[in-house]
Length: 396
Length: 139
Image (spheres, helix red, strand yellow):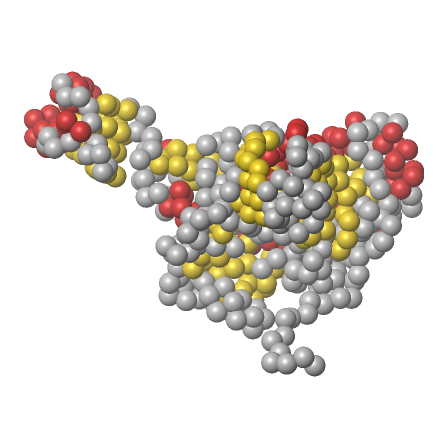
């Protein structure tokens, strides 16, 4: 058994033993669980994939004269101004003004909130245009200016949901091509798309949230941030395998970090044809090896993780909850799965390559003593389920 | 028998050359087999053509000398579709949409995506499916 303090002391002394979740299984097989748990201090996990529930708060500082922005656009992308005078919230899925969306189906959605966030972190000069109704204390009625991230007082990423513990595999049972947030799905189950880093994914390596909780320090696109709450749609009570691996989405994390410390290659605006814009983000989460049990959980392999296959032409949009079958990530990564006798080509929306890079970057930072672990101040619920939105004709 | 080779080319036809039957003469006068992947005439009446030419080195050289007598630009890299290695996130979404395996997983352990230009048939599926705009068409 180790404590957070003991692990941080070893990190500080430069003696911490750190492996990635991709390496740890073979290491434990070689050394044995008890010896490895004694020796290894941290296992790093990571993910890089699109997550629509992303955004950021920006503070512009005050102009002369001052303005209380009541409507504002950055690069023609609408931001939320229903907060203090020069604070705005930019959401990842917000479309650019005049984007024709799906009027000419399938829309291209070339630029939106996620792309603004990428450009901001890349240091590009961006246009702010804002309107106001004017007040005695904030008389300016209109402003147009150009700024970079260095001009902002704060640029704080605030993602209400990230790091989905597990996720659907999407297929299309209809006879027409469909355009979804899970990518383009060809008719009659010609292809399938999944979106998870599998055995490298943070919450699959800590399925019962024994180390990852509110207050956990995480690596977000190169910045050191933290988990600020359970993520939206967190459903820790989802059905699990005997080893504790959820068979559905289950847990999620709400994350925050300073965008001024982020690296552009891990914050990428994404355009999903026929669907919209989003943001792909790189996140690394360290798991402190407090016990043999914690270590054992990090040894999860792709073949042990089951994902539900769901039809996105009818079952998903109609919210029927129907699952065609379960497949494991070893099958998915082979590039082909077989369902009801039909072979289906498999693609991914989540980048294992980037996730692996992040897991190694985080491991290196910990080994160098540049990244300390933080003990959660609150644990994530393990018994909650996701409620549907009921359509009621009158208040009850 | 003289050995034949195949070369992929991209030709750009400015407005003044757009209506000339240049490819016809490559076939008839220079014994070249042509396989056109993609062609486009823009609203400005400029033309782009991606094609394979197959023939002896001598015939291809003579054919290109013939093309050079016009104001046509020959791009010997034949890159009508480009894949930006630095911008690719290696998610793998493109893989199932690429019909020839030009875009493929190069390293199973790291899931690195790579692009084999010689296998590309210019179908442009990748330009429509890549969420990050990594694949682009020259025209």
